[in-house]
Image 1 (tube, rainbow, N blue to C red):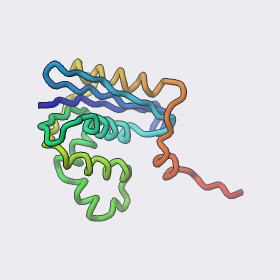
Image 2 (image 1 turned 180 degrees about the vertical axis):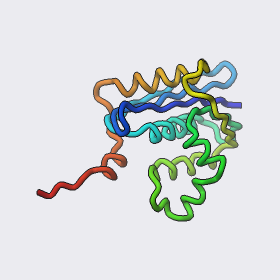
Image 3 (image 1 turned 135 degrees about the horizontal axis):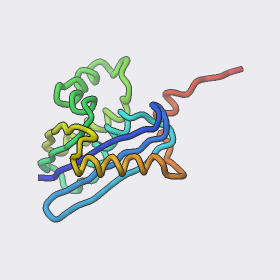
Length: 156
C-alpha cells in the first residue's frame, strides 16, 4: 500500500500558491512541492493529488490518498467528475487538471480518506508547510492554463 498525503494552498484566490505531497510506503518516503505565481487553492489541492500519483513508478498499486479537500474527494468519490466529463466540463473549472487526474487514476487502485485540515494531523500539517513555503518562493512557476483561461482581454 502506498500512502499519499496532499495539501494545496494559495495566498489569495487567485494568487501565488503551491502544493505539498508526501508519499510513503514501507521504508520509502518522499516529499514533493512546487509553487506557482497565480493559481487557486482548488487547483493546488487537485495538482497535489496528481503529482503524488505521477510520482509512483510501478503501475497497478493500491494507493490511499489523504486530503483535506472536499472539492477533490467529493468530485471523485461521488463521481461528479465523470458527469463533468460527459458534459465536456461545461461551466466547470480546472478541466485540464481533471483530465490529467482521470488519465493517471486509471493506472492504480485508489481510495481517498478525508482528513480535517489544520487539526494536528502530522502529515497534513507537513504538506501544508510544504505548500505554503512553495507558494512563497521566488521564481514561481507559471500555471499557464489557469492564467490563459483567466486572462482579461484588454484591446484598448
